[in-house]
Image 1 (tube, one colour):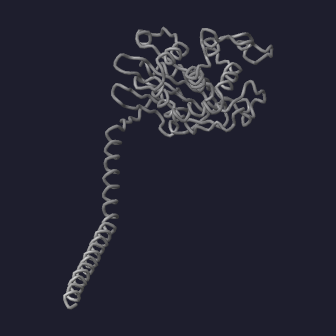
Image 2 (cartoon, helix red, strand yellow):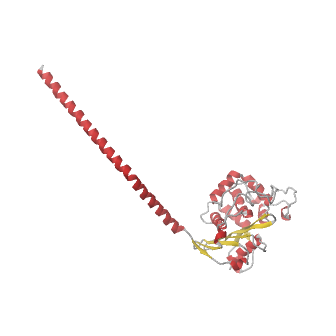
Image 3 (cartoon, rainbow, N blue to C red):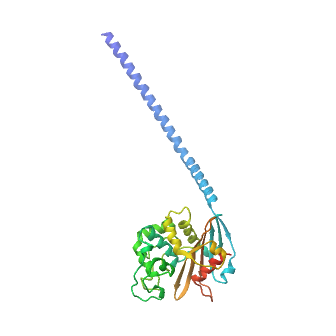
Length: 322
């Protein structure tokens, strides 16, 4: 009997010691875990701040490395008293030259320069085939006699036929066009006035759109960046699309050897309000073996002087071939 009691006491003592040891170890582990959590929580703000500062520093370093040089240039002699701006980006040296920096950063309606983008969107989405692109004239008499006929893509681009590109843009559709302008980071990317009802200069919906004195706006410097995104070697757009656009944009001038040697591609644009031209554009690029020169010339209202897209084009050619 006593032997059984002794055994029970021994077993009880062993169990009690084991439980007490486990509890102590558990409390110690819990205490250590809590200490570790507290230390980690206390360290997070400092580590987070360090990480953010490091990331910001790296980003700034990358931006400084990639940020192109900007040179303000006096090209007033080419403008002959006209108010406007010229922006050139030389891809070979990664450098901007800008005349009238304030105007270069101000957003305006792109007008018919947007035909480059609507053509791009139609080509990339398989909507436009230049070899089978004839559209039938409605018979309506438009102010530009070159629009009063059946016309194909290349000719419509050359004479800037608004009704042709109004139809083409509608066939691309708002969703796909929005994707293109956002991909290109095209100015304010605002296509909200799809039909162009904000353009009070014209009520004929065959001749209005978001790109003509309406919701969409872009600065001359942004125009240059867009040209680079389309036509640079790193472009996401197909070579076929680029070549078709180049064929449509090719400027045929024979003023000097440089222009013949280095072809110029561009598109004019002109916007009118209350019977006066308020925006005149020419944007594109000059092709050179060492790297393209992307450009944009914009002219705005000038006292006692008329502005035109032809004048903007002439200024661009003179600057490029100087």
